[in-house]
Amino acid sequence: MAKIELKNLSLTFALRKATRISLKEFLLNGMFLKSRNPLIRVPALVDLNLSATDGDRIGVIGHNGAGKSTLLKTLAGIYPPSSGQLTVEGKICSLFDISLGFESDATGRENIRYRAFLQGETPRTLRAKQQEIEEFSDLGEFLDTPVRYYSAGMLVRLAFSVATAVEPEVLLIDEVLSVGDLAFQIKAKERMKQMMANARVMVMVSHDLNSIGGMCDRVLWMEQGRVRMAGPADKVVRAYQDSVKPQKSAGGAAAA
Ligand SMILES: Nc1ncnc2c1ncn2[C@@H]1O[C@H](COP(=O)(O)OP(=O)(O)OP(=O)(O)O)[C@@H](O)[C@H]1O
Image (cartoon, rainbow, N blue to C red):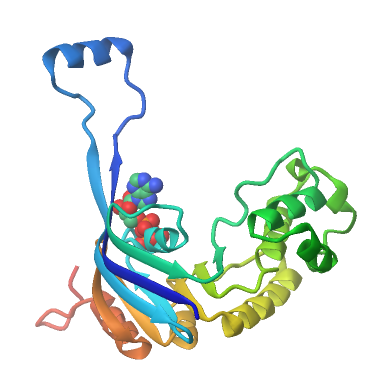
């Protein structure tokens, strides 16, 4: 059984406006005990509670900066929560930032191996999949070329082919991917559909409310790191849409 459980989970980023300060500034600030570049705390997730298990398809919506991607990255184990409890049980597949982290001097084929091992494959399980991954990527002779010479689209094709070669129990998707050229997009959509159908739990972040409505049964509407509303997809999507519609003034004109 796959499971996601968040209990009063919060995550606060601590950052500074500028990354560099001079030695002189550092010494002067130290002497006068005040910082010219103080820490700024960004509460990206605030007191979230969520429980999902086999069969759940959860959509996450909200304005820019609401905390959607941070939530997904926290579920993927990329960001540790600042407080609260996080439980994710099951083999995770994260479909976001998939093109990051390639070894640029290694070939496509070598990168498939490195990444597959990171995804938990063993030499034996990879042997059974490697050919399929290579064929799906449709990169032909380029598989023997260092990936530093790949176009952006080729890199995404390679990344997508490896990332989706797993059978995940927990599928985390940030925005429905538009990968590669048209021919590849058709293949990729088909594969995504299969993965979504087979995953036990799915959490998907998107601004495309039609995709969310079509693929998810529950939706979290996030606002400033908090859940503003949670419930059946159609109800929450409608409430969100209503909230962003231009308000009509008494005279009938749209308010600014
Ligand atoms: N690595 C980080 N370091 C510091 N602050 C961050 C980091 N990632 C996100 N934030 C901040 O956390 C808040 C939530 O960001 P997040 O990317 O989760 O929003 P989002 O809802 O996914 O937005 P969008 O719809 O624009 O993708 C924002 O205020 C953002 O500036």
